[in-house]
Amino acid sequence: MLITSLTNKQVKYACSLKEKKFRDLENKYLIEGEHLIEMANPSDIECLFTTDLEFKASYPVIYITQPILEKLSFTKNPQNKIAILKKKVQTLSYDKKHYLLLDNVSDPGNVGSIIRSALAFHIDYVVLSKNSVDIYNEKVIRGSQGAFIKVPIVYANLNEVILKLQENKIPVYASCLSNDTIDLKNIESTDSFALIVGNEGQGISKEIIDLADKSIKIEHSDAIDSLNVSVATAIMLYNLLKK
Image (cartoon, rainbow, N blue to C red):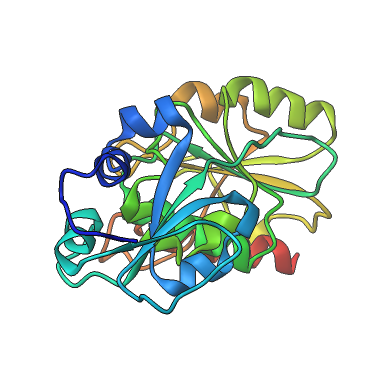
C-alpha cells in the first residue's frame, strides 16, 4: 500500500517526533538515511518510511510519495529512508574505565561531534547533565554520524556521578582554564579516568570544578582564548588514553 496523503495518521505521528516534547512523551525518535538505519538494531526500529517500492525488511515498511518524504525529512534534499526508533534505555554502571561527562553542553553539533569522538576513543559511558542538549535532536544524530547508537549515553546529576566515580577510585578531570590548571601533558599515567567538559560559553560550573580531582588544560597559542569544546574533547581523550 502506498500512502499519498500528507494528513495520513502515521505520517502526522512521525512528523510529531521532530519535536522534543513528543519524543519524550513517546520515547521514540526519527533517523534518516541508509547509513544510520544500517547501524541501528533492527529490533529497535518500529517502522520505516521509504519511496523505494522494492525495499523489504524484517520490520514494517511504509511506502510513501516524495512529498511525504520531504515533509518527514529534516533536510532540503532528503534521503529516501526515514525510520522511527525506540529510545535506548541505559543504566549507568561504575565498573568501567573511561567516562566522559558533559556539563550543560548546549550546541547539538558539538554534542554530536563529542559523541563521535567518544566512540573513536573507547569511552564506556557518556554522561550528560540534565540541562544539556537532547541527544535525539537531529543535529546531534547527524553530527555523531550514528555513533550515538553505539555509545552508552545517560542523563544524570553530575554531582552524584562524580562522587560515585571517586568512590570507585576513578580519577575525575575537569577541562578548565583557571590559574591552578595542570597542563594535559603533565598528567600522570592512569588506567582509568573521567573527563568533564563544559558549556561552550561558560565552561564547567564552579561547583563541578570543585568536585573534580584535578583541572586540566591543553597548551595552545596565545592567539586564541580557547578551543571549540568538541575539538578540545577529542584532543584530551586521545592524550588521556595514550597515558
